[in-house]
Length: 544
Image 1: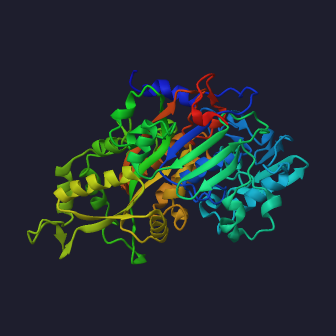
Image 2: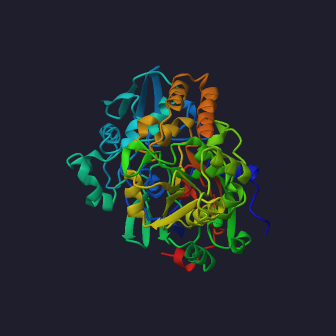
Image 3: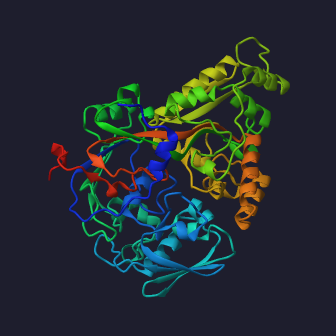
């Protein structure tokens, strides 16, 4: 069997527009091994967590979804979901007509009230600060008919359709309206969500698995696999063994597993090389963890930030964690996002220049203990790493060793997910190994890098008004947007607010008994309902 396909070929495969599923009964069981458990797969409870989003995308539909090219500025490129048609009333108004066949999993029709309710929750900064920031240009969402919703914007801008459909899927008002918003996370609904998508919530075994069941009355077409099981395996070796033993049918990337050569040519699998919206980086806290009113004593200095980057062979580090097709970015620009905005070339691996910058700013080993210091303070800091993510642990250990060679002492703090998320939200860290699945538009960079997102998605508390101004101007001027986006990204690349490590390209193995396989860059498993079990290829677990 040949090695996984090259990027240009698979780029077309991954973005191909899938045909509508043929009418047939669901059959087969698809088992996906995952590293992280989805705790809150409900819109407004995502909290920026990709594991939640991936499950939610099978349970809850949007008004419309992004088309195969993931374009965000052309209204006609979107694909109908809950809304079967839409109309631009004027430069600030969109009107959607809901598909009358759409139903919640309890049989209740999806109504305009559900759309309004979903937006009300998503636009509440107390409930969804990150999403509320993205939706701030929406003036009103109103039910204007039995199946009609009108969305009014505060201003003209090219991504109105994207904001109207991508960030805030409707929620079942008949189940949630009487529930206090801050109690939803701990409710029975959150434990067993009722959606309107191709799959219904089946059974969760905490810390082990989550089972989704095909919705046989799904109005957009009968799902293929009768069951989709997400099998939790935080340990990468365990995920590899699940594939090799035939207990799992897919993972998101073979190159996050130990010794991936075992899987590169395995006869049971087909391989898709998928350019992604994922970026990996080390956040540098720009505020003092002990007193956020003060700048960080180390990372507020751009020369030091630049020296930390120059000291790393990022190409080697990223490749060891995510595979040979992964690219090193100079800014938070994923492989897919690079279609819309070209970032400057990344800083090279140059330890001599790193040493020169450190010496120029006064960092020298004055006492001969192997650690450089300045004014009696050694150059040391902690790097927080989430325990379940093996790729980040691997990269962190390589970074620690590279910095040690320059006399920088870094303590790795490997912490469990709950503590990790709590500390990063509170700013109680020096540096942290982070990752993000980006929106497919440069305007989404505001979530993690704008001054206005401090206290929400911008956990590093980085603030550069020039970047904010360029991004805001791009949002108002469609003709100038590409140039303004490039300039905004160039500001980030020059300022080095974080250590950008990896723009990821995944190699996704999928068992050969499934046909019609499409893996989406924005949400890899969102289209598994379109997959089909090949005739005569069933395994014992596929049978009812």
